Image (cartoon, rainbow, N blue to C red; front, top):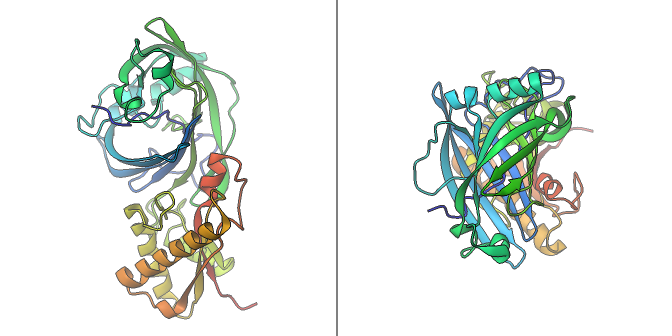
Amino acid sequence: MFRSGFRILAFSTLSSAAPLLSQQPAVPLPLPQGATVVQTLWTPDAERESFLTAQEVSPKGTKWTWSLLEVHAAGDTVKEEFAFVEGAADVADAFRFRSFHGKEGPFEHPGYTMMAVSRAVYRRLRATGADSFQVMELAPPSDAGVGGQVLEGLLGRRNWVPVRWRGTLSVASPTPAPFSLLVNGRRTEVSALHLRGNFTAKGRRFEPQVWVLADSTYPLLLKWVGHSAQPTNVLQTVRVDFPVGEGGGTGATAPGGGQLELSLKEQCRVELPGIYFAFNSAVLDPASDRTIGVLAEVLARHPDWTGTIEGHTDSVGTAAPNRSLSERRAAAVRDRLVEAHKADSVRLGTAGYGSSRPRETNATIEGRARNRRVELVRRCAG
């Protein structure tokens, strides 16, 4: 049984002509082990934030873990966790895309990609402008009527059924365009190819708009607009965090120990990549542990450094609760540093600014997701 596993995937793809991080070496693709993709989903009655982490990467493919929290206009929330495997052979050749997962297995679905279009499809799109394609997604039963197509929650999506949509993907614009993305906390522009779908199933038509990273190695999905039952849905990738580690590896592009350390030396401030909290919560997601561990190593190398961990939120809610939440999040990071990594608490202060220092507009779901962040500010002379 598929339990709130429905999602419209929105991502972006890395361009072979434009690396994910501008002015830095190309990112190793497919995404390395430990990379996390953060997505937002907007529907007429709900918003969702998802964290998808490449838990295991091998020559056979990538095992992804996916945690989400969805908040409905009526105040109800849905929290789910899934796991799925995207096979290396499918990333190479599949012409089908699967947009949902179940709580129980199977976790592998040969013949489908889940995080990108395949390299073969991408190359045919660039060569000919169109390619046959299929999308497997959840949709209301054909006898559900209009009410069943828009109803959410226990009596809605949990009764939806898998539907295979057949048709074509075509290139909407032959020239890749810039797509704004946060990469390890840094605003950058990647090169995205705009596609248009034209699919049919059971006498109905489905015409989503799709943006993929313009890179044949791993055309990661960046944005997907439209669902067969809810054409105004927008799912978008808002940030990609690469593993924070020491000394190379994935590291030329990741602000791992080296880049994080350099930023603190030269700029005295860094947004900490890979720090995640559940919606309206100060509980750290386990995916945050790697970044916190590397930060502890950097601080240990500089026993003279002192600083402040800052928490920032979006503007949802009122000022006082947001400030309190940001303070508790900053404290949670410091507490993890002190308790798990024996960092000196005297060297680390905390501050919470709530929504008073936004980086981007709070008028959009992706802007709000990017404003929720944790920064470390070093107390530098002058």
